[in-house]
Image (tube, rainbow, N blue to C red):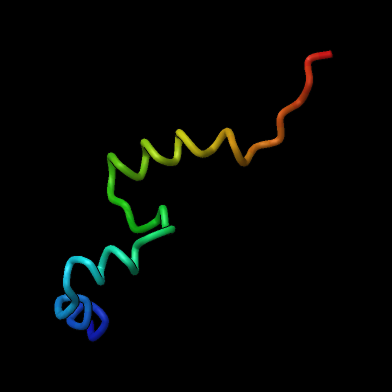
Length: 49
């Protein structure tokens, strides 16, 4: 609870800086859209040959 109260005291710019680089900070549908876009970059691709 104390952490949530502390977050309320931050400006929008400070909150954005804290969220930067963290996909977990996004709520649906943004989280889902970004996860689907990035997942192929982090999976092992196998050649069909």
